[in-house]
Amino acid sequence: MIDEEVTRNLKAQMQAELEEEERLTRKKEKEDNIALIESWDNIQAMMDAEYELAARLQEEEIGELSIREKSRLFTKLMDKRKKHFARLRAEKIRSKPPTKVQKRNQMCAYLKNMANYKHRQLKNKSFKE
Image (tube, rainbow, N blue to C red; front, side, top):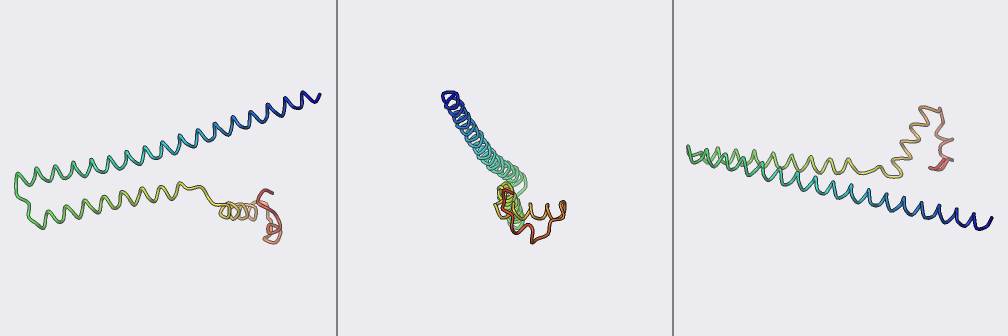
């Protein structure tokens, strides 16, 4: 009887360790994928900028562009790059999981609306309840 308990406990412990390792592996793979996607986005942005610059240079060879046109194209290119990287930063910020306080506020709002709890009732409850 004791041996059965020990084997069950050992089996449960090994299963928990295995699940934790799998979870960490999935998390690592997800982070690696995100980093790879970001690097590909950066490379793509650089390639687009180089392509546009090459096209402009070809135009310049065909018909000399004025200084104003060059500065306008350069500022347009820089604005496009700024917007691209700002979008990447915004996506990175949005992908963060909510904090414990944000989760609690969301849960309180849900319980107030759905279960008709009052603020006083929710104040005494813990996050796990």
